[in-house]
Length: 423
Ligand code: ATP
Ligand code: MG
Image 1 (cartoon, helix red, strand yellow):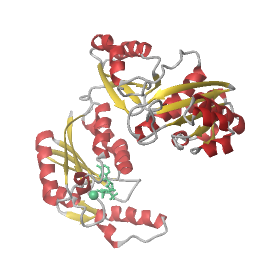
Image 2: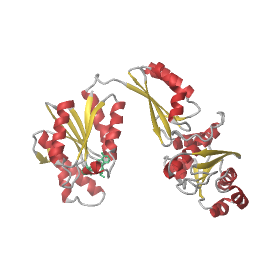
Image 3: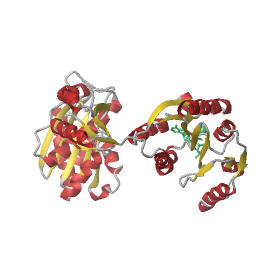
Image 4: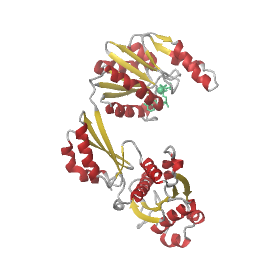
């Protein structure tokens, strides 16, 4: 079954806002067996929105629209959709009451302009929005159905999950293929090396489709099967075995979450000592809900003086080896672990660029050390990319080193391979 997606907003065309809703919806629908046949973006212009809705209905018979349901006069989706369905707009008392109640809950009275959001085309079904003021709307005629949703991404996503997908499944019951998917998340191997490592597994995996999705921090391998769970299981087993040295997680989990789980299982706590990542690792681990159960905190020791003062790094090592060196990384990790009084510590020191590189320590040179209960390992990396990428890759490599050190049964990490990117 096929739908079209219409994202509405002049800011999307200007490039001020990235169309997150269109991308997210494509992934979400695909996972439930619905194809997006076309995605169109139009400005907040009534004539263009109406024409786009008409066109989509003619081609696909179903269109999901995002945006333009706000209270201001430049939000035109309601009017455009009403025109496309030849329906008059009227004020809906129930919607008006629920908008008033939302404001009342925050202790303010509803501004008059929000009355616009209670305008509903005759015959439209109101899709209640518990996450914002504008409800979604469903319109239908002989050509098909149009769903109008607010543009705010978290409201859009929740309405899709709570209302739109169940509704489409009800309509198209029995006509949607079941999609089974496995996602193997890898890091520490570039996309082309990974392709080489599995090239002989791709053809035998059929009818399972194999896709590679590279990110800065690693490459995700997607295995997709249509109504064929056993084939997915077979392919999954083969890929899992082959990629074992690089797979840090399966499904929609990130590395910080996996590290947290491993720490939690062991009842261990983590401290960090960050230089070139400037708190990025701390940020990533604290983004995981409940991380206070396994993360104690740490130090951002950016200048040499801070490394000496806060972590007791030996000034002689700094003078002799430089701040980006194995010795300094090891001292930072060991000292962070001891001073925090915990089982594990991570330390990162490197040159993120764009300046600061030298012939023997070019930009991208990073030393990472992990201390797991007194056993310290250090490793040298050369990451490609600009400042942002080097920092992100360093944070990912550090968490992966810790994950592997905790599991420790696996072979040592291959040095210097950038996560997910060809050198
Ligand atoms: P609401 O009534 O809840 O404000 P709305 O339907 O009026 O929702 P818009 O005014 O179009 O939505 O957009 C609200 C916010 O959501 C804006 O910050 C806008 O930039 C953002 N937004 C809109 N569409 C998208 C999109 N496709 N992807 C990401 N952000 C979007
Ligand atoms: Mg808008």
